[in-house]
Image: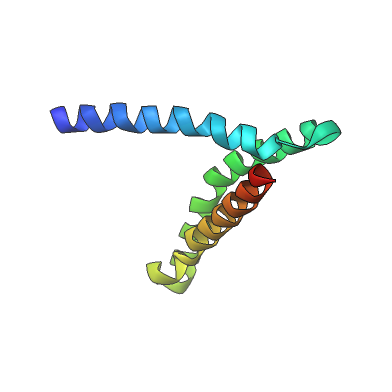
Length: 92
């Protein structure tokens, strides 16, 4: 029970501290397009609700959870590419 409570506090701390960084990095340098940039960030949050449904549909139709794990893999590739691009922007 104590371990669960500790993990809950750690997860909340990690999530709250990093979401603000993702958001500010996402709209940095957008200038007049800040509204568009922030709306794309919100759509990414909604995508986090839709991707598990898509993964479930793929798993059900192919009868293979291994094939369905391509969906999170693609999402992590997108996040990795975003991080690499953001780090190049911050260095410049």
